[in-house]
Each structure stands twice: as structure tokens, then as C-alpha cells.
Image (cartoon, rainbow, N blue to C red):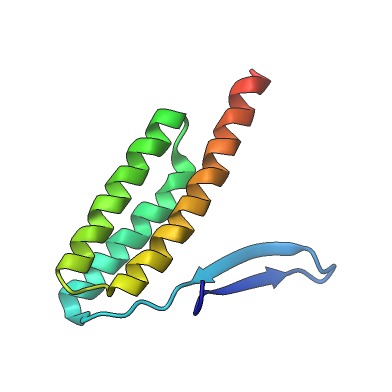
Length: 106
């Protein structure tokens, strides 16, 4: 994905402590657009709080619908939406793997 930047914070031992993924968003933001994108970001961050595959899949559809709404309202361009959804799909895959491992460990 072009324009995507991953920033990793490391400790004094060189071990990763945190990562931050930045996707440049293009669109007509303004106050309402900024609020919409902030909420979209919160939705994406909350994927990690899901506990079942069903919750993860439902969460994906909520994010997809909200992101499409943001695009239709002009808060995101088509390219920004595509980049964002590729990232969300990657996060969903990671979280499905996490939940699958937790279920097999039980």
C-alpha cells in the first residue's frame, strides 16, 4: 500500500514496544469529517477487544459499512478507502488467528 507508514517504538534493548500504522486519508474533512474518521479509527482499534470469530466478522462488516459511508459523504477518497480496507483485512486475519489459537488452547 502506497503512503502507509509503520512506526515502531523500541526500548533500549532494541525490542519493539509499540507500533503505529499511519494511512494518509484524503477527502474533504472539516470538523464533521475529522469526527467521522476518529470514530472509524476507534472502531478499528476495538477489533482487538473481540473474543469470538463471530464478533470479529460482525466488527469487520460494521467497519466496512462505516468506511463506505465516509467515502460516500466525501470524507474519504476511493484510494483512501481501498488502502484502509486492505489494512483492516490484514488486522482481521491476525485477530481471527488470535481467537483460533485461544479456542484451541482451551
